[in-house]
Figure (cartoon, rainbow, N blue to C red):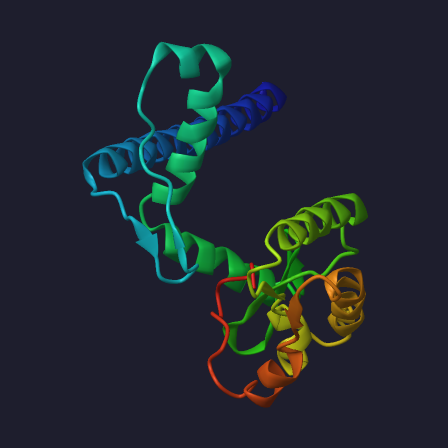
Length: 216
């Protein structure tokens, strides 16, 4: 009899524990739904932001609904970009993720280096040779067709090359000076190629790059 009572008490404790766990899950589910609904409502009523100061770019506007774009899938693609750009407190969420990445010791996030002093710097990969040759050919052809014009061209080095001291420790930096020399050798005979690398390096201590615009 006493053994049965002990087993019953054990079963009762297990049932109570399951109820507590289920109650916690229910509360978490309710909170999630409430937060999700609040975010949806907030996004519906907030005014769209046209320009991002932190990224130095125009943000995606709400796409116009038409059957052709819906059928092709273009509308959903545009709408995803719109939601991504216009999500409420977007800059705060981005900054939170960057801070969490830094706390966990990450040096890179989605192809972007988390530099010193809040700098975001694009990872400099090997240039796309096919894309580069195509663009240089078009530029050269333009110069050939308009020899009466003083055609000039410049390529501005990325922040990762000019501001090497802001890069994470031991992060590789591609020598863009060599890339620019190759470009100059390719089109230099057809137009005036202006190399601004040395000028940019002289002004490296000045705010010549947006800290949070990794596209530079």
